[in-house]
Image (cartoon, rainbow, N blue to C red; front, side):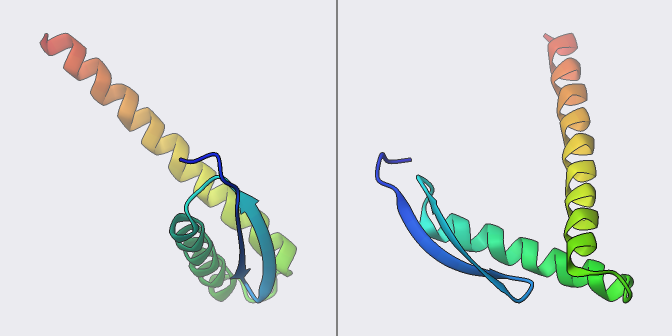
Length: 84
């Protein structure tokens, strides 16, 4: 990462967001595309939800995946430590 702030506009679920940060533009675009795809998938499975509820449900799903991956990671670290 550099000290230079990057400004980029991305589209997520039909809305434009002007973002600024010290992350590479390609990474921001990749994150936005992933979130857009996930929100569209959530919306397709839940046709009557508002965009806000789709965003929250998508965020909960991503948070659940994160916690599962974190647990898997911790279990792997524990296994590695036992093998030493």
